[in-house]
Image (tube, rainbow, N blue to C red):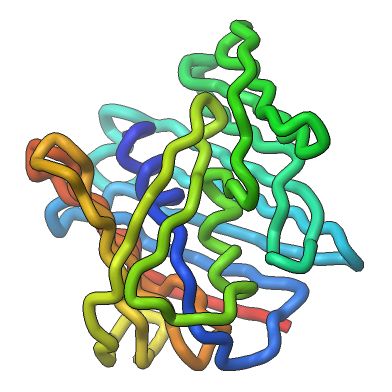
Length: 233
């Protein structure tokens, strides 16, 4: 569950046209399903005060999965709001019932390095400009001003930094438990069958907020994250 939920929460980075003013406070709720079966629920909050932001995402096991793995995964990101959007300074990931997989990362933009504490092991990684972390990337959508056909952006899981490239597939109208939305549908450009696939649908009239996300691993297992509630101001 940890891997699937974590990857679902931080699937991709892309640009999209701003439709409305960017809110300063957001609360969102998502359902997680695995091959159509509910396995979890995600609660997220985003707040901005001046040039600072904070994001917290909590994923909890539900349904049949809870019988075998009653756990909770928390992701948090904090940093600055700059001309290009969000600039992470701190990222953390941890589980409620285990220290396994816990990671903390500090983004030192002045030195151009990310300093990671991965289960007690310290390391430094080069930090490209405008790198996002696994959760800030979802909210960076609100700050990007173009709907390019192809978008590339660096993203970190707190341990390493990778370049992700996405292409605009179409602009469908989709229905979710939170309502119906006109969306921009992006998918990850993969180099081969061993890479995970990712897709995201961004609501055009809701400040490009992700209303649906899908992750498929190389074995074909698919997790879908669907919006069920959203408040913003």
